[in-house]
Length: 483
Ligand SMILES: *[C@@H]1O[C@H](CO)[C@@H](O)[C@H](O)[C@H]1NC(C)=O
Ligand SMILES: *[C@@H]1O[C@H](CO)[C@@H](O)[C@H](O)[C@H]1NC(C)=O
Ligand SMILES: *[C@@H]1O[C@H](CO)[C@@H](O)[C@H](O)[C@H]1NC(C)=O
Ligand SMILES: *[C@@H]1O[C@H](CO)[C@@H](O)[C@H](O)[C@H]1NC(C)=O
Ligand SMILES: *[C@@H]1O[C@H](CO)[C@@H](O)[C@H](O)[C@H]1NC(C)=O
Ligand SMILES: *[C@@H]1O[C@H](CO)[C@@H](O)[C@H](O)[C@H]1NC(C)=O
Ligand SMILES: *[C@@H]1O[C@H](CO)[C@@H](O)[C@H](O)[C@H]1NC(C)=O
Ligand SMILES: *[C@@H]1O[C@H](CO)[C@@H](O)[C@H](O)[C@H]1NC(C)=O
Image (tube, rainbow, N blue to C red):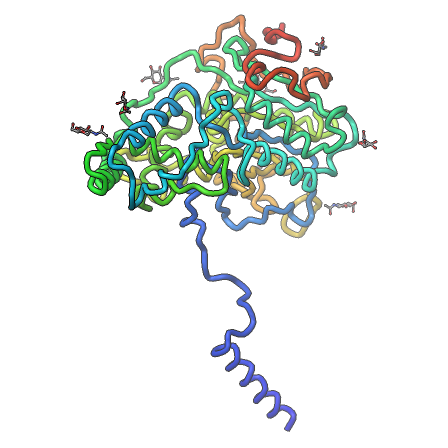
C-alpha cells in the first residue's frame, strides 16, 4: 500500500518535472563560449579564460603546488601610437567627413558616439576605465592568485620581473598590489629587465639576430580579405559615397575590442557580421602563428630561453630557487614559449587560403590581453595509480593544457623527470644562442632569476606615465655576460 502511494507520488513528481519546469538540470545543455564575441577579437580584446579541456583547474587531491612560475602579458591597453592609432584617426575622419550624415542604419550611433581616443598620452598604456580595464585585470589576477597560491608566501621578500615597457611594468605593479596587499610596498622587489637587444639571453624579450621566414602576404588570405570587401560593400551600399575600403573595415573593426578595453559597451560590435568577426579573428591567428608561433623558424629558439631557465627553477625546487616566480612581458614573447614547450602546435601549417576550423592556434584563447602562462610544480603523495613525487603542469589563461607527449601524472600532469627530459631536450636542440646568433659579448644565459635586486625603489610610479618605458634597469645598465 505504502509502496503504491510512493509510486503515485513519484509519477506526479516526474510529470511535474516534464510539464511544469521542475528542478534545474544538473548540467546545462547550452554551451555558448564559441558565440562570445570576445573570443573573436584576437589578441586585442578584453581578457577571457581559455576554453578548457575539462581538466580541473584545482590542484589534484593528493598533491599540493609547491612552486609556481608565471609569465603574464600586460593587461588591456590603448592602441599603439605608430600604426593602429593613426589608421583609426584617418578611418574615423573619413566617416566624419561623410556629408550625408548617418541619419539611420548601422552607423547612426555616430551622431552621439564619442571617441575614447581623446588623450594621446594614454596610447600604448594600460586602460583604467570600464569593467574590462587593464589595471583592474592585473590587480584582480593578483588577488585571485593570493587566494590560490598564498600558501607559498612565507613573509619574505619576493622579486617580480618585468620587461622595461611602461604598460608591462604597470601590470606587474598592479598584480603585485593585488597579491601582496599592504605588504606590496616592502615585500615585492620590482626588477625591470630592459627590452634592449644587448640583454641577449638575459631577457624576458629575447631578440633574435637572424631573419625569420615570415611570409608578408599572410594578411591577404582570400577568405579573410573577401569578408572585409563584403563589409565595405555593405556599408557603402547603405551609405552611398562613403567609399570605405577593405582596409578601412579592418581598421574600424579594431574599435570594438579597444573600446571595450575602456568602456562597458561598444556599438562597433554590431556594425559587423559574425562572419566578418570570425575572419577578423583569423587574421590574428595567422599573424601570431607566422610571426611569433610555430610558423616562424626562430620563435621556438627564442621561447626556449624561458622554458629552459624555468626548467632549472623547477629542478632546483622551492627551497633553493624560491616558491613564487612572477614575470611580465608581451604577447609575442609568450607565444614562442608555448612553442618551445611543444604546446598547441598545429599538425599542419595554418592555411592562408581558408580558415582552419580545427586548428588549436586560436590566439584569443592563447594570448588575449592579460594572457598568462603558469607552470605549477606539484608535490604529490602516492596513490594506487601514481607514485609519490614531483610533477609539472601548464595552465594557460586558467585552463590546464596537458602535454601530448607526457600526461601520466595526476590531473594529466607530467612527472618532473619526464618534463625535464622533454623540455630540456627541446631547449638543447633549439639552442637559442647559436640559432639566433647572439653576439658573444651579450649575455648567453638568463641570469636574473638568480641574481636580482632587493630594492623596492621601482614599486611605484615616480615620473609621469611613459617616462620610464624602456629606460631603466635595476642597476641602471644591462647585465653583462657572465664569466
Ligand atoms: C601527503 O602526505 C603527508 C604525510 O602523510 C601529509 O602530511 C600531507 O598533507 C599529504 N599531502 C597532501 C597534498 O595530501
Ligand atoms: C576629410 O575632409 C578634409 C577636408 O575636406 C580633408 O582634408 C581630409 O583629407 C578628409 N579626410 C579623409 C580621411 O578623407
Ligand atoms: C567618394 O568618392 C567619390 C568619387 O570619387 C567622391 O566624389 C566623394 O567625395 C568620396 N566621398 C568621400 C566621403 O570621400
Ligand atoms: C603585512 O602587512 C601588515 C599590515 O601592514 C603587517 O601587519 C604584517 O606584519 C605584514 N607582513 C609581513 C610578513 O611583512
Ligand atoms: C629562417 O628562414 C629564413 C628565410 O628562409 C632564413 O634566412 C633563416 O636562415 C632561417 N633561420 C633559421 C634559424 O632557420
Ligand atoms: C618517463 O620517464 C620514465 C623513466 O625515465 C620512462 O620510463 C617513461 O617512459 C617516461 N614517460 C614518458 C611519458 O616520457
Ligand atoms: C639550459 O639550462 C641549463 C641548466 O640551467 C644550462 O646548463 C644550459 O646551458 C641551458 N641551455 C641553454 C640553451 O641556455
Ligand atoms: C639595486 O637597485 C638600487 C636602486 O636602483 C641601486 O641603488 C642598487 O645599487 C642596486 N643594488 C645592487 C646590488 O645592484
